[in-house]
Image (cartoon, rainbow, N blue to C red):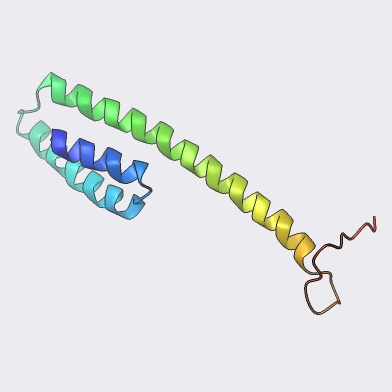
Length: 97
């Protein structure tokens, strides 16, 4: 299961979230099967916990960055085109309050 955990980490680092999710689901299925069989060593359980905590923190950070970028794009869009002008006019700011 070490290889699966590393693949998940690398997929998240490289922002390949769909691949990370698919591998996470396979990994979780393997963990569940090992638990049900009574064959999950403590070190593998600890590895799974560490992966979960790392993934949680990494994805929260990625989500925060995406939200910040979205807000930047929203703000930029507000200045791109003035209502009623029909098209963007670079260099002009709307100063009406």
